[in-house]
Amino acid sequence: MNIGDVAARAHLPAKTIRYYEEIGLITPARGQNGYRAFSETDLHKLVFIGRARSLGFTIEECRALLALYEDATRASADVKRIAHDHLRQIEAKIAELQAMHKTLGDLVQACAGDQRPDCPILKGLASGPV
Image (cartoon, rainbow, N blue to C red; front, side, top):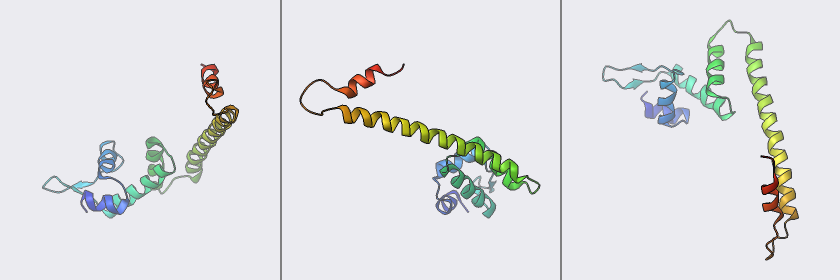
């Protein structure tokens, strides 16, 4: 498969695939003309990486997960550790977003939103922690 074919089948932009090659996540064969020649295995890896990235795993986490995926002697505990650590990061982000939502909601609720210059939103933004 050429890069256009594999990009369409993996649902990834060609630019992303080139980047993954550049950083060593995939290593497609090269034809005598120098063009990339992707195998079904390459496609499978790209789908794997794409799915992991869509779940928010970093490139390095994807690299570790891919190495574990390809290791028939892997311990599932290693995979679970990476996924669990990532889940804790997501939970921390959710808590942070909920706190932001509450604070901004309180500021919006406090603002009359009329023609007066007094604005609790601006006061709240100006008085926040630095």
